[in-house]
Image (cartoon, rainbow, N blue to C red; front, side, top):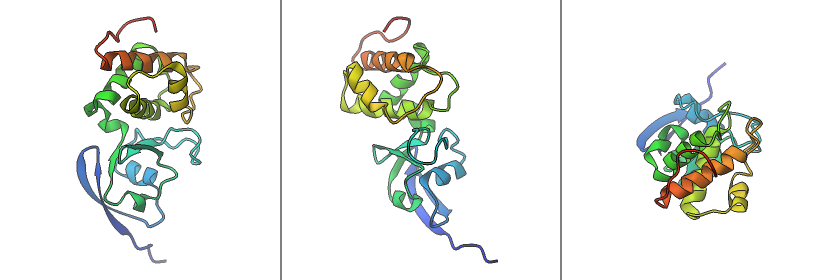
Length: 167
């Protein structure tokens, strides 16, 4: 049986230009994991859990729902490239400082969703934070630490203290 023909895509991933061959029906999730970007997780495969979230041209998407071919010419940011982004790095620190991470399955998607929120709304209230994170399922933390971590990240980005206890 002949192997299916591949398509070649050119895109920027975590700041680096990439040229990759993939199957025409591949998902962006599969393409990224094939690049050893294992921070992008497959949870539900239906766009419900947020474990596969990435930023595609600055927009938060569930990579399990995006055809890889749609990323042609685009810029993709995964958790592996997050530390270079001010809002995402602050979100990572905030979640860590406020015990907003436990098993780690949801964490990459939560960080990317929080960073996208903080780019749009520098001082989000609890309702805005919970709304922005609604597409990310976490079975470990109960969201208290996650919401506190996003608040801490927002304070840090506005020049206030972020580390330590309290919300």
